[in-house]
Amino acid sequence: MNKPKIVRPEESQPAHALWFDRKKYVTINFMVHKPKDVQVDIQPDKMILCCKNDSDDVIYNELHFYETVQINDSRERVYDRTINILLRKLKPDYAWPQLQKDLAKPSWITVDFDNWRDWEHEEDDGKEEYERYMEMIQEMASSNKGQAPDMGDLSDSD
Image 1 (cartoon, rainbow, N blue to C red):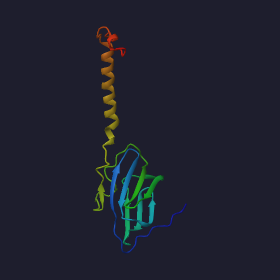
Image 2 (image 1 turned 135 degrees about the horizontal axis):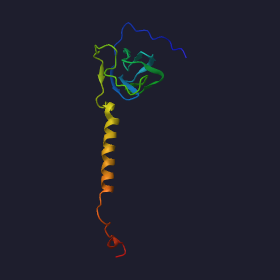
Image 3 (image 1 turned 90 degrees about the vertical axis):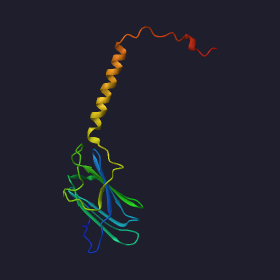
Image 4 (image 1 turned 30 degrees about the vertical axis):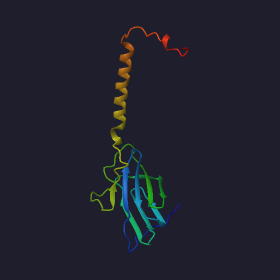
């Protein structure tokens, strides 16, 4: 499947983008009101988005990724107010400190703090909590609490 090359239009503006990082994916949401003629080219090291909004302004975004992505398992989806891009990381379980390789952050890229999670230490925290729980269960099971109480008076036959 050969996609046509997207050429940068002479007059264009970038769409505002919100992004967040997860274990296996990076998600980018481009804010475009009623996008049309949407073209997305996802390559291993960069992506290009070109479209028009409801007032026929030409939107063009090009960004070079911090790390490489799997193009065959990356997707885009167009909605009324956004174009959502889901990028599958080539190296899962590796946090991206930034979206782009370049340290200079364009004004149109923002971190989506509503969806951001510090997932790097999630498993460790869960494991530690599980180990504490198991210790508590073993402690309760091994300590002699005496005989089980007689619960004969709790019957429903009153």
